[in-house]
Length: 117
Ligand SMILES: [Zn+2]
Ligand SMILES: [Zn+2]
Image (tube, rainbow, N blue to C red; front, side, top):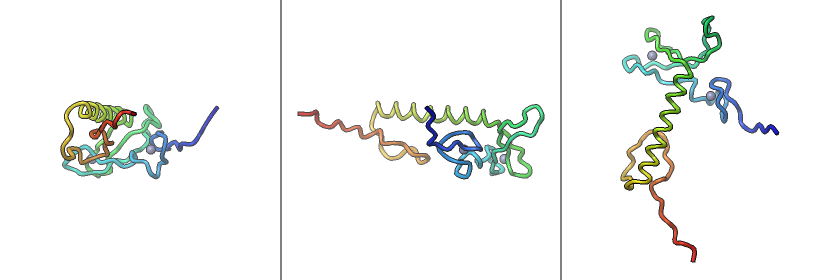
């Protein structure tokens, strides 16, 4: 049985959004001195034809990264956040919001509701 309720993005091939809403199409370049914006493109090199890559739009930056590399980094980053959440959730309660970027689900208030009686 094939259920197709998610849109697969043409830009990054991930599901749940289309290329218009894709957060991968434009990403900030890593090189801090240029402050460039990278765009997700497909390689036109014969050796890697059609392979997805990021290239910086800044005229003199030449920032470049393969999409797969970036994806792996991103996945590892997400895993780190998850691990951090798990550690924090088990450890002491968090005071204040240490993480200003991204959304972190409410893991800190694990108030145990009274057992059924
Ligand atoms: Zn996408
Ligand atoms: Zn750049």
